[in-house]
Image 1 (cartoon, rainbow, N blue to C red):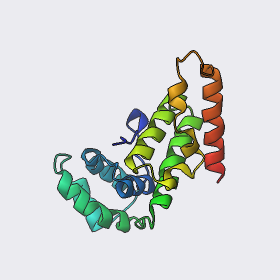
Image 2: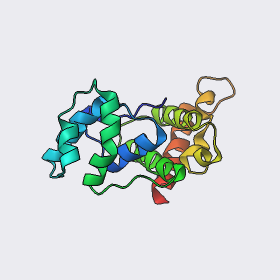
Image 3: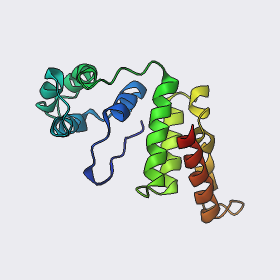
Length: 163
């Protein structure tokens, strides 16, 4: 399972959380705190307020209530796995391009998403999906240098957010 990454305790956007939910990569333990932060940010709704009041240990209740809370914020369920992957890959690319994560983390997240989606063709159709296997290069005598690998990942991230 891929674990979503939120640097420095940041709260992900509701849209990113909707993608994680659709891809079944959501760590529900974090959601009540994010819901509380979304309320502070000005979002509103009965389900959202109820979600913010839950404990992170109540993961079943969190998962049951999250779709209604997302709807309170105007975030619809993602219509397809492809749409959810696009949002997740865009999030990963933005984090790398803003300097929050290193290239190897990006490669590991791609691996997790590909495996988590059963190696489906949709997981490979995005620019980041094309990074599948790049992590195998690291440290091998035949591999490209770390700088070359970092450049390849950066370029894939740029292409990902351009789509």
